[in-house]
Image 1 (cartoon, one colour):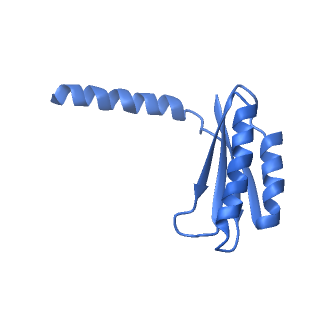
Image 2: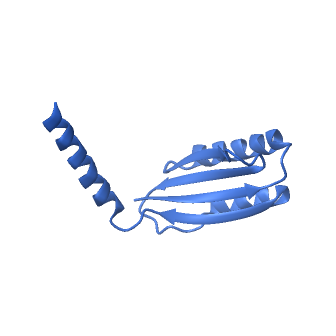
Length: 112
């Protein structure tokens, strides 16, 4: 099962280089220490002060705010407002995606 944690930071524009470096270092430590997680750092396309750290977990654990995500959120609070959320795929999403992919491949094959 795949589930995600999103830790969002809303801060004032400017000075993002130091914050980004600190988050990237912490995310690298998380990824090196956990074999079942992928990490990603996103910057808002329109608002300079907004960042989001994604922890994408590949395990059968019940989705929760992980120790790693909680520590990341705690460290970011000194830079601005933080939101820490846990997400999982909607029920039936994977099956629907496979069905759509199969239909697309079949239609593409018929047109060739």
